[in-house]
Length: 306
Image (cartoon, rainbow, N blue to C red; front, side, top):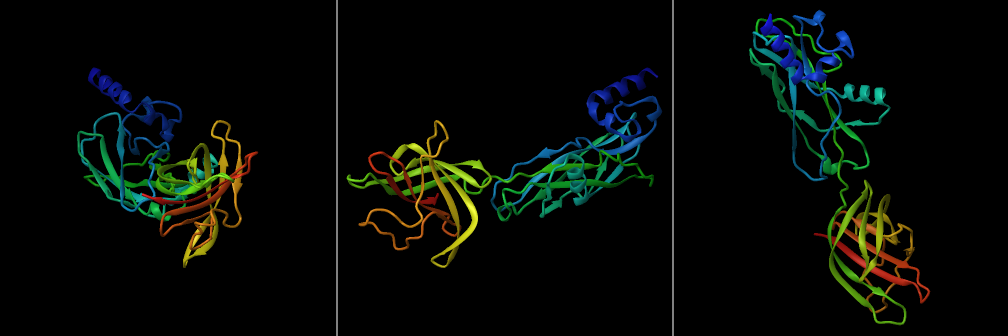
């Protein structure tokens, strides 16, 4: 009896939250009326997160599976898994969220054998294809335990509210990176001031980046929002942007962008299309101004991702 008490306390210390979630006794820990029972569960059923970069390639994930019982299993237990989009819908309903099932997910571990005398094992899966998805959407992968069975063929119940591993998969802003900036700034009445530098475009939100520098002038930042509106440049469908010079100390707008190309008449570009992102060249073409009492300052830049 003493050994049983010690074993039970050790088990409780290891999975304190797990036992409180089993449907037999919501909000309670492993009670006497659960003695002798056994459940297959995901050890951490709360929403987890794995941030994805918007690039090609597979991204792996793992999660812990637990056999919840007051004594170590005496037989091997095989636990089977399934990709479960319905669990995403259920989560959205319960928590008033709007996650979409991640479209490309696969289980590496379709079944897991938890050996006799142990309670835990790790299952693994993978996702891919983040580069083709909208970073502003909310995605989730849900993997559920579909069944569990002992080596002698006895079904092991699956903890109803602890059967699913839920993994939020936010996608990083695909435009945040270092860019090679080539262009100039014009102060009316003065020679054109060239800029050739590497500049960092940092994430503001899922569709907006921010960079420091207006031509060769570093006191102002530019917010660049990539829109769904398109324009064809040289046969390539490009995305129009909203480029806004701001004062970085206040966040207030200090200017705007031109509707038609405005710049140095001695440096007219071959194509006068402005304020767009070219996904083929990974290139922002910006033509903006900031307001000055001595005459609005003009900037024209071609920013090419490194």
